[in-house]
Amino acid sequence: MNDLPERSRLVQQHLVDAGVAAEIRILPDSARTAPEAAAAIGCDVSAIANSLVFVADGTPVLVMTSGGHRVDLDVLARSTGAATIAMAPASVVREATGQAIGGVAPVGHPTRLRTYIDEDLREHGEIWAAAGHPHTVMPLTFETLQHLTDGDVIAVD
Image (cartoon, rainbow, N blue to C red; front, top):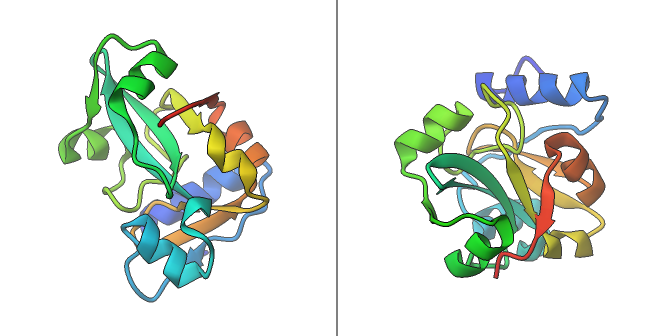
């Protein structure tokens, strides 16, 4: 754990505190995009759980999407009940999560974010999420992701 970047150590501590035994893997190259992460891990791109931050009615929310999807903002607004929703700028992502775009983990943030999970991630026995840094990832099950984030399962596309 000491070899992990600082933000990934925070994620690892959150996992430990939640009783989740997921080992964070350090990748040799950046995995800022779902295709990069899938290639590095050797999994299908749809098994990548992208961590995207949106601003819904003025409040940052985390949306965990399958790497095989593009989020449809109209569908996302309906699914979350938000009147307005837009991608968060990098500064809001950093402030809300403490992490940089491309490495945002589902946990390890300064404060808990309302989280939504793409229903299509349920199709995979193992999913991979960023672990707080663009070079770190972690394997999770859909159930573990939902447990860790207390996320609502929704349609995103």
